[in-house]
Length: 184
Image (cartoon, rainbow, N blue to C red; front, side):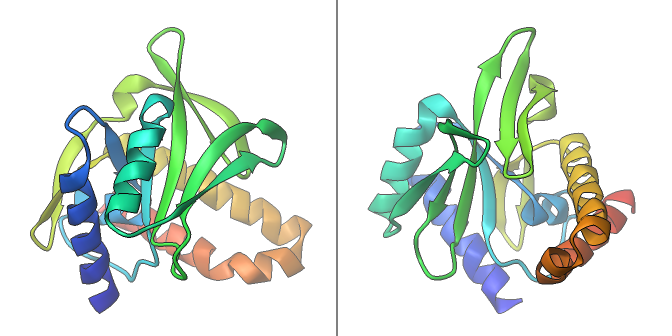
């Protein structure tokens, strides 16, 4: 878990370098572990969510701490930039972009889920801590919801496209493990 400690250090550097009004939320595996209060598995990256209005600040901050970024249009809607990744070999940061929506909602897209709507209060932030690093996480409810959707996607992929699933099986196993941790 040495890489996890390094990722948490880089996350801390990033969060401390952000302009004060820029809002980001950790989600994914580190969110699961943050809500649990300890590291439960190895992580390959830091998953973040940011508002579209904060994308320039997030990219500038990543550049300031030594990371270049790449933006991704959604495969089903090429005009929708839905994700930013750092371009380092490990893809240390993956950032999903969210948009405000009516009725106190926000919209988020993932590669396999386009334009999903959720209540803003699911975001949080909930302040959590891992190994001395404090960070803003999405709520445990939103974390669980995203993990359930991700696991359902992998289950469907396993039956519909076993070859593609084989390349992602480890991610499915992490997802199932994360759901177990969230239910403890």
